[in-house]
Amino acid sequence: MANSRKFQGALRCFFVLVPLGFIAPLHAKPVLTLLPVDTQANAINDSGVVVGTVGFGLGFVRTPDGMITSFKAEDSNSWTTPQSINNSGVTAGSYLVSNTLVTHGFVRAADGTIADFDAPGAGAQQYEGTWATGINASGIITGYYAEESGYQHGLVRATDGSFTFFDVPGAMFTEAWCINDKGVIAGYWFADGSSPPHGFVRSATGKITSFDPPGASNGTYANAVNVKGAITGIYMDDARVAHGYIRQPSGAFTTFDIASGPIVRSMGINAKGTVTGVGGYTKAGFAGFVRYQSGKMAVINTPKSDENDANGINTDGVVVGTAQIPAKHHQTNWYGFIWTP
Image 1 (cartoon, rainbow, N blue to C red):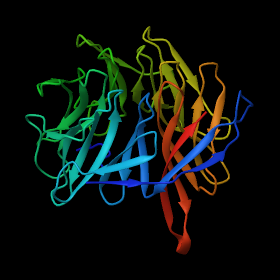
Image 2 (image 1 turned 30 degrees about the horizontal axis):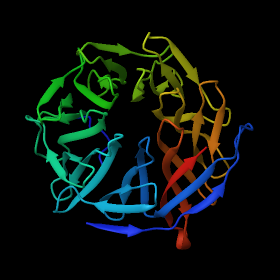
Image 3 (image 1 turned 90 degrees about the vertical axis):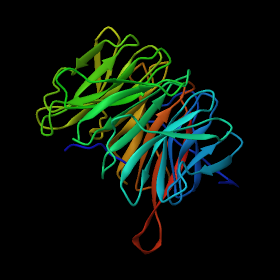
């Protein structure tokens, strides 16, 4: 069985501003804001509200004034992971119940009200359940669920709580990862448990198109779609080296690499076509990157960090992610970050 990567209170925090440098000079130096220790930042909306995880199994929402509000989607032993936030401040994500290892979806309103949900037919055994991965401006959620057989199916959850399910033709596992404001969904699918993945895009009317960039002989992953329908992700070539790509609604591809090393993940794309993700080597390890529509690349450097992951980007090009910074006794601490160009 193939399975995807699973995974009240308020506190005031201070932040650190650190100027960084681009690979190539641009208009101004970016500013890095480090969040408190044990945070991981997953997504940001156009108002600058950030969501992610904090501490032991909690989700958080951080407003632009620096206020962090932590929350748990379910009161029992569970791990809450917000994955997406829209411009109205509505958050979608999943939580994993520790003693059963079953995953459930949730939606959190801007006022803090939380509703959890499960797709009808989702399994209730270990590594089964429902995953909510993306939300759009209308509050429509996408994701996928795993049934008792282990097969995975894409889902769309409307604001009234009703579901629509879909499968890519020929797929045993369909994983939907993002939805834009027009209702276009992207993700990837597997024919079986051993075949490489392929990307797909599903239109608002339900038409599904499978795709692979040229040279994608060992798999394609689609992770983000912008309001114009451009999709970004990575693909693997014959040598299993990863490369980034942007797929236009017309089906045309642009592929890209970082000179210092392979692309690891391509995680976000905004309305301007700016892409963020992880790739390239620094002295400390992999680092987040930003690729502008012009093709210019910038590396996100986090001081004293082993490496960092860039996870999301908003319309203004502000990136959120997570830095790994060494601590005493060979330990590593996690810090969410906000990178403002």
